[in-house]
Length: 107
Image 1 (cartoon, helix red, strand yellow):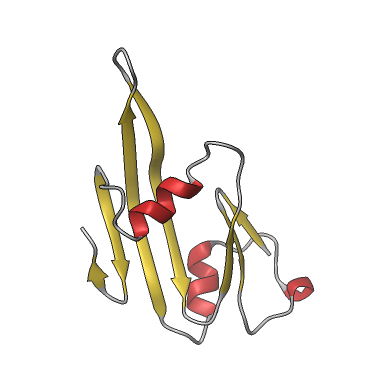
Image 2: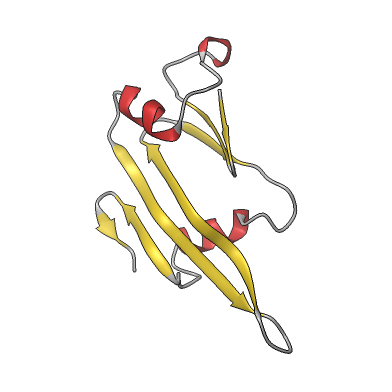
């Protein structure tokens, strides 16, 4: 089991109770037999506040999602779940970082 920021990843080929709680996203991705389908590196997104200043939507966010995995995005209100998904499908422009889907940079 992995709880890392927004992600709770369960590799498809393992049972939930057999997972080690201290595994990182990279260790799980390397242990997966499936290729990485979505790779996010150093994703940053900020929003301008009304009246000046900025709000951070995501900062230095990294994740690998392999084909065949079941991945749930969980988090508190305003933790960046929707910002990440909108960035993934191109609805939000990102300030910095890379998002690759099947090897193609979506910027």
